[in-house]
Amino acid sequence: MTRADSFHTDILDARADAIRSGSRRDLARAITLVESSRAEDVEQAQELLERLMPGTGGADRIGISGMPGAGKSTFIEILGRILVDAGHKVAVLAVDPSSPVSGGSIMGDKTRMSMLSRMDAAFVRPSPAGRTPGGVARKTREAMLFCEAAGYDIVLVETVGVGQAEWRVSSMVDLFAVLMLPDAGDVLQGIKRGILELSDLILVNKADGPREESALQAVEQYRNALSITGNEQSGVIVRACSAHDRSSVGACWQDISEMLAIRKKDSRFDQRRQSQLRDWIRSVAEDSLLQLLHDNRELSGLLDHLEQDAREGKTTPLRAGLTFRDRVIREITDGSPESGIPL
Image 1 (cartoon, helix red, strand yellow):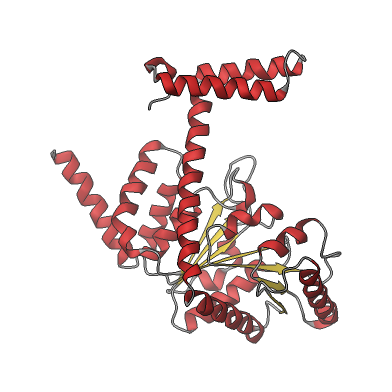
Image 2 (cartoon, rainbow, N blue to C red):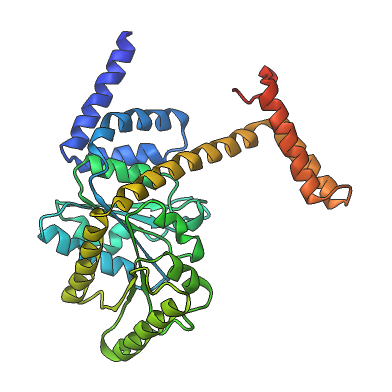
């Protein structure tokens, strides 16, 4: 090992130790590395994560989503404070919409969770969703692992409420909760139908003041919808709540904790974690292959040519796609150096 390699190793070891000791500053820096698009930062983040992996996996991972304006941030602020008061360490990964200009977070959930973010046992991290479908930041999974290594035993992932693509959230958490508005319309239409199929907990928020009666009616509608879709036996909980009422949010947490306790007694909890790990690896592999193909000038040019032929009616879209597939297979099989696709 060279002196430079030794120095690099010492720095990573020191950062890993700092994260294990609960340094929020070093945790934030590690997540910044994960979110970077620079190859050297990505590699450094992976080396750091490899050192920390033995200390991960022990947190409860909870996804919280919902329609814009449903009160997700207010709910999480109160829930986080309840959990900290109960002795938990809580990490909130708030995946914000991305600015089309800068690519950064638009809403900045630290400003919307000002009290929670100042608590010593809490860590609030807004991250831009970028171009990732489903409102989940590209590196949210790695950020969760870093938080677990830092000793946070509950990780809340707040996502952009964009509808049926929220399956990406449920693929990385132990429980998926969604906040709905009391007067959001037909529960079997559009976004709500997809949510019914994914949710473990449906919370009709803003059940206070003049909207309380509407919220209670919405609860019955959702329960009826679960019955119609055949999901009434799946254990989905539907309740009305008020994100401004600490006791109401506390009752929601009681439902969540009881549901998690039941699942942990069942082998399916571990099976779900293993399935998520497998899906994660395959997702990374697929994304990497797509990026590799995109970066290969020859193949990218071929794809443009095939698209032009399809537009001019010289071939069908299916034929164009299959032609491209066959060319990629040939390049990989040949393994020619000039192909730009290493085996």
